[in-house]
Image (cartoon, rainbow, N blue to C red; front, side):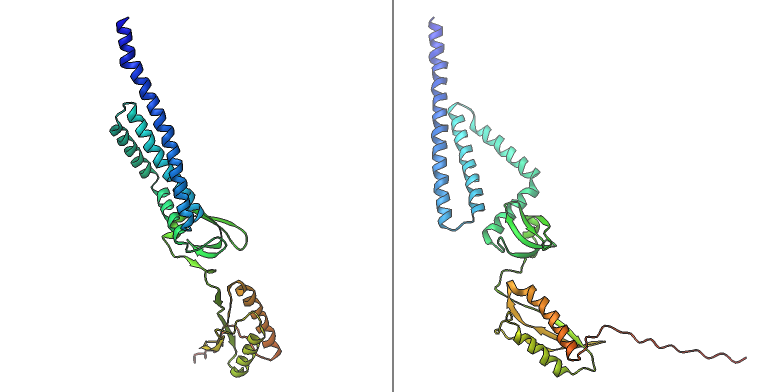
Length: 273
């Protein structure tokens, strides 16, 4: 009987105390972890951190705190925490090596969200594709093309290459090259083009449009036409300008030549007998 009581005192009671202590450490630690994460979220909200990045960093911070709490609870139970840390470290290294490409996409996603080279709704050229940005996550970016195809691009491919944001600036220049024939009147053609630009309300007055001779080509005199418009009006204005230029040139006898090649045939003389 004395041995049984001694066993209860030495083992059962001690283990009961350790288990209760471990549970208290876990429960209290979990509550404190949530409070810390909430405080971190408030700080990030005041700092204007993107919602996606804020949620992800909060999840990472909570997971790290929870792992710390679990290790403390295991220590209360008498588990060798040094060995546990070594196991966690080895597992983390193995996972990191196996998910190397995923982690690179994650790192690129964090950089994209933090530095914001583009935002949702922007039209961009990235990774050999073009489209309107629909979503930016920590692993990939989704866009749709003008003909409504969905594209998903890994963030590492975007951040490691050139990013062209067509929508970033409020104004954009339309660059047209209009060819006229060598027999046409250059000054008349320029006056017509300048008149078309003046009557187009979507073209901005400042900076002023440019109409000039750009090149004396093989088959045409090429005039450069460079008006400025608001970015949202770029394509509608470009389409309408091309149509108006063709119609008005036809009405005023100004030709728009196409490449031609003159072929001269010579009959070879017969050799004398």
